[in-house]
Length: 506
Image 1 (cartoon, rainbow, N blue to C red):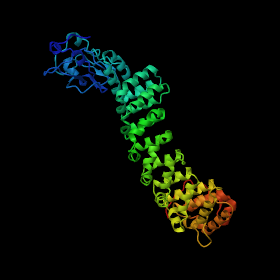
Image 2: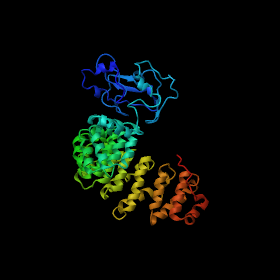
Image 3: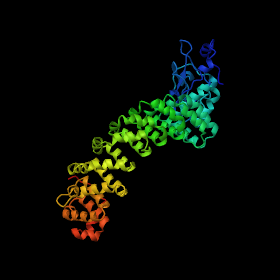
Image 4: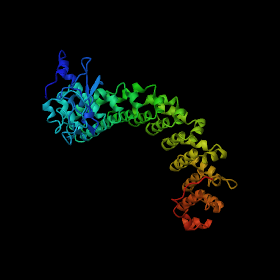
């Protein structure tokens, strides 16, 4: 309650039963701000300009409902008097002098009782609590149920409000969580796509004290919005967290809303992360993902984002599954492998097969490198092909018994014969030197003698090259500094730490 309305205000009230609701709309200060610049949202009931009665109750620190038809400055109905200022987040700073009129704006005359105290205290109805969340609770008695929900959701959309509610969630009770969930449910899809809203929602979902019932309510409200959220920058993160905390409730929704759009989502900047999370946490219900990607295996493997989904399928799904077996049959064709090995993204898929595949899968990949010496040199000198070849050597060395034939064949192709050797041709290459280093590490028995002979033939070329010095360092670890260095005339000082060296091109 405050001073009585002026005559012009009382005229607007006549014949209108909703006068009180019309003047309970809030103001949204941008702090620090002068009170004379604060905009009050009003809705006129007639053609003439409506005035807000001083002291009328107003909701604080939020914006509700649609944009009003017109706005009035606070100074227009407070009259020409000395205005105080609003400090940071609800601190009232009275004016320095009662005689000052720096912020005075012509308008209706201020009631005397109100003008006498306006310089020393904030106007009635504008006493602000210290925090935004406290201001929301202070305005609750004057707000309807719908207005409360809108007030809280709009508070979440502000950086200060999101930070404050996130801090409150650290020690939140079940009743506070239930109230928060009830308020955000109608606006959940929109809040999940908001920069500040996702901060609160992520904290809420990961809260240990949040009951499973409330989590299920949040998940159910995602129905019809899965595709939209999957392609959104912030929404995709919320879907991933929902899959992690309530996977059973989302299985059918994801399958129903993403079916037929898997390949498009896998190529999306944000959508591919949702599919990866589905593969990791829902491996038993992703047949529709495998089926759709199987029709676009080569395109997906060569794509910067889709290749990630294929890697997760290779890592987390059982290879004996009929749908996965069909995917491998297409992926490991010789013509397909030749393209993937030299591709900047496809090589990651092939290396995932080498790391997680069975013996038959590895054999098919090794055959690509045994087609001939010319092709093997191309792969060894290529940035991406050298990575796959290096991974082949590691995989074959781990499974020597099962893949002994393939290992011996590949090592023979690299070490060559007495007349020619791939080892010597790629030793000083920018990428080929990594193949040489890996060959030195995995060589055994007669292969070690052959490696030392090839290194002796290279002689001082290795000492004059940065790549060669890395090879010498690998040889020192394998054969020892004295046993190996003396054969080449290399001193221990030449085989010291090479951490400061960088790779150079030929």
